[in-house]
Length: 495
Ligand code: SF4
Ligand code: FE
Image (cartoon, rainbow, N blue to C red; front, side, top):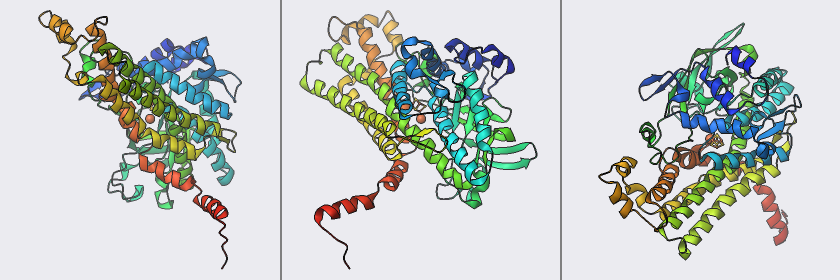
């Protein structure tokens, strides 16, 4: 982040406007649809995603939401944005989930800032335990970074997922050595890294990035066991912006067909082209035996996160489906009522999992609280399924018009406007445009730009379904369950 921005931020809590201004001063190297983007903040495709992150700053200024949106720093005692906070109790873990539900409700999109929060919490306890066992000094470096992050209210992008190439081969066995981020040079003043991170949520809305390995490693992969922080606009980093379904509707300048004009999310390919990292910003370099711990903890926190953010977006989708029924006169039909009940049941089940894994969290050696890993993985496993069913039911209630309706331009064209208004009218009291708006919102959430966050990210974000099943199997304590059964059945293991 430029020095003048640091000086400009007097308070520990940035306003949304200050956040936006801080991004303007950054020198991102971003490619989008075949071109270099000079001004990401005002680019019509990128801007809605910036607005979502901005909401994490705006809500923290609102007295009504300060209990959820802010916390007391364990380092300084100052009030900081909860996205910069290390969880000091199960109450903090619960408030995190509630904050994410609130932001999902306010944006109906991915607000991106959680990956950094989940990364700092995972890195904190892992570097503490690594130093205890190996005598390294990573934790002190991390705390120095955290202090700056809190004081300057940074958005940090937690970067984990490598491109991975041939999934059947370990990092060091890939035909292209850059398929996983790795150290290519160790120098007296730092390291040089090369590789990429894929699907990087909110990368171009972040001040700094926190890079972590993506899988457990063995000794032969030691060069790939690397974690570090770097300014998101550092020389040696560039981004290729991810395409989303219906993204070019944002270039049309309308307000209806985009479904959600104000908010969105984004992902990008983040490329490290011989990026230099000074030692003070290196948080793991070769300690392969701690790679798995870091990955599991970050994944655990992010699987908890989905029990909040997806639920908040689900609230909007349920509301939109109910309005669609109101607008076409079907609201009183018993099957519509039942579908809305089912959607609510599924959505609240996800929330119960998010709250449950938080309430059952425990303290790690560094003092930071970790979620209950079994319940966090159960939470995310449900997220790989329930939003799909909620989306299916929303599409069922919405009807086919959601995907066959003429464009906003046709609604505005004097030659076709009256015909559209006449034939797409539902109940007489509701203007056709209102009905079109709610159908476009459902389309946005289920098939459009927000479907990245609500559907496919529900499947693959924070790890694909099989990753959770492996963790559930590891945590299930089947042996104890067998003992319980034997005890009840009166079975003794006599030889
Ligand atoms: Fe946060 Fe959810 Fe987006 Fe992940 S998917 S960054 S948890 S809003
Ligand atoms: Fe995610």
